[in-house]
Image 1 (cartoon, rainbow, N blue to C red):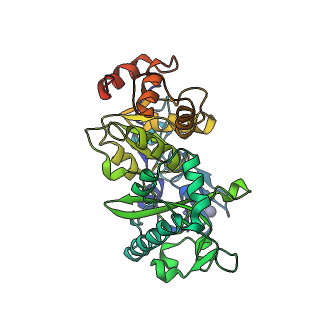
Image 2: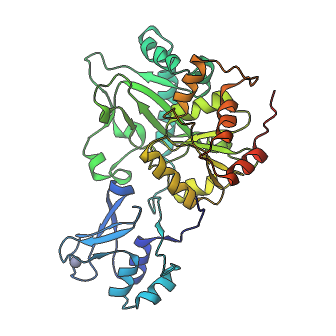
Length: 379
Ligand SMILES: [Zn+2]
């Protein structure tokens, strides 16, 4: 994989600096959709912009003006194609660039009230997990190879349905949420709705920033994953990123904690919580602390796309696939638990790593770097 740094373009600011346009966030599609007055037709709110999508773009629903940053400079600022590329730092022969992935002008952290309520929520959900009512969720986690020690360390909890058999509803105010910090579609829901399921807290600077959920018993796949409204984008274990340990990057919480359980003493395991999530510049900067970021996304097309994205955006990324035959790190943990390794290695995940080093799919450059970062003579 070639590791190249693509220029980052903030299309929203580019347009606001050059044209008398003021945007307002209107939806969360493609990382955030903004609308404002159109610099061409004068329409007041039909000029839309998606600055955080893979290819940032704008579109006027009234006059149909549309394009990307280069097109904007050509048509609005009347620049030549080459001048527009120069202005944006884009190589005209390559044209590769990327948008800002973090919603602009919004604080990256949740409201203080949200973080306080989340802390209370987590302690109640943890108690419930170890009560008779939480038994099936606890059994589910144990069945996925996660130990009680790991479950407690990661503050995992679960929530039942209400007595009436419905999702729990909690007022926005209790979570410090209002029309100001919600998208119109979130605000339209009227309250914070909490389904039955497992909850995985994510912390930044010691505070809960995100509560993602997994509902293993929900029959419909599309309702199995999600997060509590007001959660903010962050990476699992990002407080632990240092120059002293490589980070292993996965796309699901259970994959990351499977690695943490087996090899937490030599690597920091993180998860993006979805193959296309956590791509903000803030998250990218946090990953910059690590000596190496080992990309171990799922063995499927979405996981491959995620590896390509991070390989192109991080200078310290190395392709580090889960061994062929396992879909993800948790599946590999289960494989190891069912067929205990005959090799001398004690913990399963260092075996993942050494098996990886033998993988013919891994380029030579990766072998070398990993053997530097991870001692292979562990007892
Ligand atoms: Zn227009």
